[in-house]
Image (cartoon, rainbow over the protein chains, first blue to last red):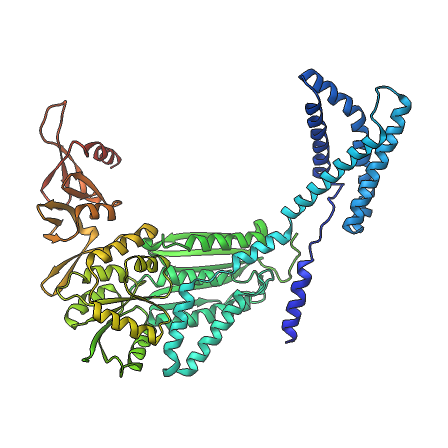
Length: 349
Length: 259
């Protein structure tokens, strides 16, 4: 019960873990985006308000003479208050940005009116225009941060994880049904194994698990498959030098074993041998799963999808540090995964 | 009511056992006798004809030869058994069964459903070969897999000829002849249907003939002048030279340059 509560609390915290944030005004990319966006807006306005190319250019230059000082001083000011903005709540931050820009626009207007070089529009119009531009840009940065938010990639992770072959589920249930009268104890164990498997499949796929746990899961899965396939399935476990404390994303190895059984053992009329090998090599963890290769079954849908799926999850967890390679050699199909040997969950950006 | 003779085909031992259990459960209502079991299509082709089975319970996904292909081969038997397909999850096959009014059950199977299907099947009898062929074609459209064997009915048994052993098919009057290295057989499939099903392995060389792409050794100029040459196909495994029609020559010439 306590565990269930803990899980629920964590889930609700996680949902708010990524509130809206202002962009980092000291980031060169952000500065460049603002410069380009504001000038593009000015260009659009000049285009709209003029009837010929010469006039467009003229208008743009005219506008720029007023616009650029406001733009540049605003950028400098935002650069300066950036640490303060990072501490403020999102809405207050937005208000501060708006206030700063409007103040600078008003100041520039004041200086300009005194110099009286070209005539400038009324103060109210200038302020309204500046406010619109600021609002548009803040909206744009909010969308941008949403598009690249880690929350999104985490939602994607969960979507990738929640896949189980219906074929496996229904055949397993059928096998358990067949056991209930003849060997109730074995049937009980099979249902417990299924429950464990599904608990993991439906768990929060964003947390790392220990290799030892993933191996237990492999064994539970294998015992269910053994029930269905009997002597047709032979699994060779090579786990003596597996680093049991290493952390890895959940359900990376189990789908590979499921694939090996589905594509390597089930299509064969005889017995098929699957090898599960995990070892530590320096600061890397290496896992290899090998099964008989049936080329005529390779277009049975799903194999490549499952592999692409795991590849994508590895990438989301480890970025470029993980590797997944597949190959076929002398009638055997093998998948190899290499991930960094980690004992602590380091933060993912 | 006398006992209904049932034959069970499934590659998973627990699945076969479960069906036997269920049959036992309603034996008082529907007396049945399991007259045989097989673990895949090939075993079933050997065992079913002599078993006297009236109803087959047939898994779809099996190694070697799946249930749908098996049913097509067995349909050639003089007194072919009725068929009830059993599948865990096979969307395309289920669609095909629905479209062609073939009986099927979903695993795990319920006793009531099995009983109802048996009653229906024993009344309706064996599905026709055409119905099964249409269902198979529907499945092939989604998974792209053709049969591995062609079958020839010989009195009360089925002879399987692996598709890869076929050198050519030729339509003659009412029948299609299949030629392997060793011998010839008559098959009931039409040339058009064979061409569609085995499009990636066979090519049409003439209105009445399909040859195995793998068996083509080369082409020989037969007759005609340079303006209008006629060609013959040379094949592995037979000395026969088969004429290529004018219409098919451009396709075959492409194939010849690929080789």
